[in-house]
Every structure is written in C-alpha cells, then in structure tokens.
Image (tube, rainbow, N blue to C red; front, side, top):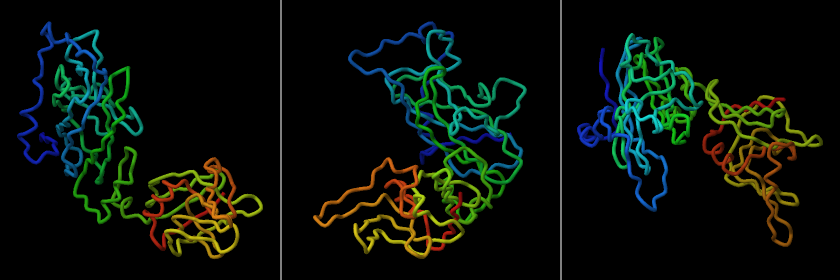
Length: 326
C-alpha cells in the first residue's frame, strides 16, 4: 500500500515541524486548560490545504493527510485525549453534511483514521490555539476512472459545525479533461466523469417552480430563483439559445426599463437579466421589488437577483442552449 501525504506548502518539511505533538492521552494534565481573561471563546480553524489532482490507481488503498491550524481561542481535543468533559473535534464530510464517503475503506483494524463513514479523528490528542495539526486517514480509490470531488468541514462533535468547508479532488486512473476548470462549478460532493466536464453548457428554466438552472451536461452548476412573465404576458416556452449579450439594455418605450446583464434568448425582446430599474420623466430611478423574485411578474423576460444575474452573465456564452418549460 502506498502512502500519500497532502500539503499545499511548497516546502513539504515545513508543516510537520510546526505540528503540535501528539499528546499522550494518559497524561493527567492534558485535559486542563486555563482560558485567557477578556478573550472571546470560540472554535475556528484555517485549512492549510492538500495536494490536489493526485492520481490514484483504481481500487487501491492510500493514506492521506490534511493539515489545519487552530485559529480559535479554545483547544481542540481528539477521540484519543480521553477527556470526558471536553468536546471532541473531528473532520466531517460536507455538502451535504455527514454523507457517507464512498472512499471509506473497509479495513480489519482500527488504524484507518475514520470514526464512521462520515467522520475522521484528529491526529493530535490536543491542539492548542495557534498550533498546527492534522487528520490522517486511509481511503480506497474507486474502481471507476474519474474524479471524486469531496467537501470536508471541521466539527465539534455534537455541538457545532465550523462552517468553513474545503474541497479536495481525488483522481482515479488516468484522467484528462480539457475543461477541468469546470470543476469549480461542482459545489457538492460527487463523482465526476470526463463526459461530465466536457458536457455542453445549457440553461433550463422551470416556470412552474420559478427556477433557472445553469448546467454542464447533466450537472446542475447553479440554481437561481427567477421571476418569469405574468399570465397576461407569459414567458414563451421552447428550445432556443443565447443570441447576444449586453451589459445593460434599455427599452425604447416608456417607462424605459434599464435591464443589466442582458442575455437575449428569443427574438421579440425576450431576455434573461437582473431586476430592472425604471426611469421616470423626472429622472427618478426605481428598482423592481426584490420580493417579486419567485413569482410571475415580468412582461415575458426572466428576471434574476443582481448577484445571480452577474454570475449567469459571466458564465453564459453566445450560443448556449436555453430550454424554457412548465
């Protein structure tokens, strides 16, 4: 079996020299800690990273290590500390939280580093504020060639998630993809194939749910709430494409709608855009109400919240297929 040590730092010898020593859990003083006065007590961590895009052989076992720094003001204790009155710190699978990791190895001993199929124990019995520590565990590479994209987060078991998820890509086999940068759009833990990454971009709008989906192949990259046409001016259904893009489009007739991040998807003036502003004759500008999102209110266009529209505009290319349906 091969041992793989992950680290983002250029000098691989640097991290181990700064990791806290693995305290002996039989030490009677390990559980005692005097909190500093006038300091907010909180758990926090910095993820120091892991080498990414490593290639594993299908079906083989590997040992991996992730490094963190305790940036909070409270010590972190592992399952090995033996401190009954101290909260235990673990690494957990995320996005979705506590899902079973398919890389979990079935080993015939307790040295895998896993507490369960979704929790991993801290290497150090105690990790004081400011110290660097690690999580070391075994994985079994999948038998299928591709990338398993996994999100992790640190949890204080039974108390709180620290809500700072980080992602690691586990490559299995010889895996090359021209559009590997599209992995950034995969925002949940899942297995990704070469076909997924090389799939065509598309936009799907479900009028019944008032949702817009940005997709690569069958992977949903983002899902946004929208406001489509009201009953008297409905958004037309069917398959079209993005014909052109404009940073800002202004309608010719009164009240002169100002529509940022315009994506024209059908002839006749139908577009996907941010919530419009309206300019009245006295020069006063009014933005359509934010609470319109999620309900059919437009004159046939597909309206998005400003930040969502900006993402969709930057992500979309001229020629991207669009499918609008109920």
